[in-house]
Amino acid sequence: AFDVLIVGGGPAGAAAAVYAARKGIRTGVAAERFGGQVLDTLGIENFISVKETQGPHFALALDEHVRHYDVDVMNLQRASALVPGDGLVEVQMESGATLKAKTVILSTGARWRNINVPGEQEFKNKGVAYCPHCDGPLFKGKRVAVIGGGNSGVEAAIDLAGIVGHVTLIEYDTQLRADAVLQRKLTSLPNVTVLTNAQTTSITGTDKVNGLTYKDRATGEEKRVDLEGVFIQIGLVPNTDWLKGTVELSRHGEIIVDAKGQTSVPGVFAAGDCTTVPYKQIIIAAGDGAKAALSAFDHLIRTSAP
Ligand code: FAD
Image (cartoon, rainbow, N blue to C red; front, side, top):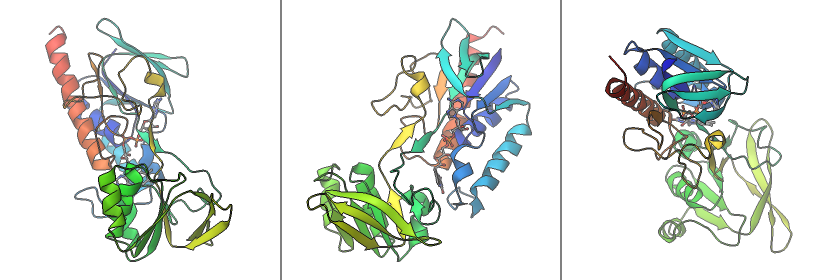
């Protein structure tokens, strides 16, 4: 059995693996796609001490750092169930294999919900973005839209309004769903237009985004906005379906963790975008992965026979 088995190989899982392996304990990482979301990221400019890098390059560096230690990396392996037990926790894989470990760190990340309109896939990283903290500065002085009028959409619009030239916020419903205080702030900004009852129908462009079209749901009329960027803010979905019923999840499906990364199951820890920890960023996921590994080690020295 592993001393620490990490499920998920993004920044959180990689950091957990390095921290666990450096304790000289038996460490494994099982990941559906080692590297995680950074594999789909173009530029990264906010991982402190690395001024600028590319996502795939960052993912390779994660892989090299983990393999520098004695870690059993099991890539292209998807976990399908977690079975807590007395002393050992089991992780069942879709391949049919079962892995056993004294402690488990869950770091399966999350994915941005897609809006599924023509142009979204085509212009990803070419004007279509999901993370204002990451990509906001790329649109300095330009015109952007934010799709989604919940808290994250309105927060994104307020944030972007301070960087870009103009923001159009587009909400499908007849009213915004964000907290009133955020809505007041939003409507006080001079360079923001709010469109409600508007259904985005396509994102247009040539080699990069040049606009979007939407249907005015009151009149049925098709309209167009010229712009350079579209931020889609209709939800971040944690990859935790397989944990329903075993580990306590929030109503958004995030794994509930305490300050040490401990979940509701003894010996099972979690880190990164799949947890309730706010602000889904690489540096935060990596820091929490390190924290979860130290917590797992602490658990081991308290519970394992010498
Ligand atoms: P993830 O990176 O999501 O990794 C999850 C891992 O778990 C993957 O290996 C996945 O394959 C695996 N997994 C999932 N389900 C299972 C399962 N059932 N069994 C086994 N393995 C599983 N953040 C920044 O700080 N700066 C940026 O510039 C930036 N840009 C971004 C751009 C894009 C396009 C996207 C999508 C995100 C961006 N982010 C950025 C966010 C950042 O990528 C995430 O916060 C970070 O990757 C979270 O790390 P994680 O390890 O928690 O999860």
